Image (cartoon, rainbow over all chains, first blue to last red; front, side, top):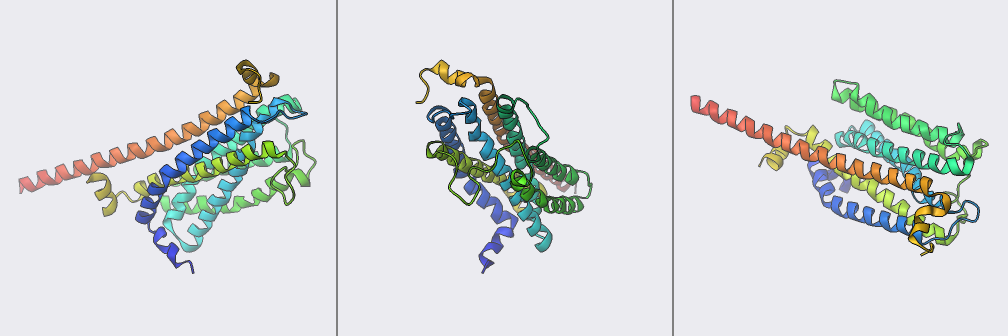
Length: 244
Length: 66
């Protein structure tokens, strides 16, 4: 059933596939990001309670959702790498980790800049904020742990293992606003009910979320290509490609 | 357009500092990550091209010696 996937475990095929997809993903991601953000910044009405400060939602929510999406993708790659021992999957884990770390940092910083005018504090030790901060440490932990082993094979395995164990944090982040009394508000769109946000504000938000997802894919392609070259630098196909 | 003027747009109803801080940091980080990732790939390719060329020169030299 999944036999057609087999060639993509081969690094050379994957390198060329990523190279083909990269320009389309990057251009569409940046175009949608600009569209969604300009729409959200200038063409939607202000919130009746929060005024224009709510416009931070157009980067805060997309980066927060995709910081978790990136972690799910990274953990899936780690699972594939550990169970089927596919090398490129290990490299994908390391390619995604910095992207996830940047998304998480964006979610935290924009959240602080939104919290200061609305809550009166840059930071509170609220369950949602704390669990998202732990997500940042998990990403940094995966990167640091990989770097701590001089044997790259061992480093790959240990980093993938940490990525898998850290999955426990995803439901904690998502349900933190229900399980604990948090200052952070509950879900507006990631729930099985009609979104509690006006359509005029929802559309630019959905576009920005899609843009962050596409940018995640684009950056993964770019970084995975570099990782493939570095890891396979002594293989004939790379030497022909780069040296010839 | 929701705002009356461009200065209104920049002011963001008094929340300009927080809104533009958020968007500024976001774009800085995203573009920075794209730039670093692209630069790393370019640099590694150059490095590998140079080391392959060096190996070929060494090989050529050794063949001349025989």
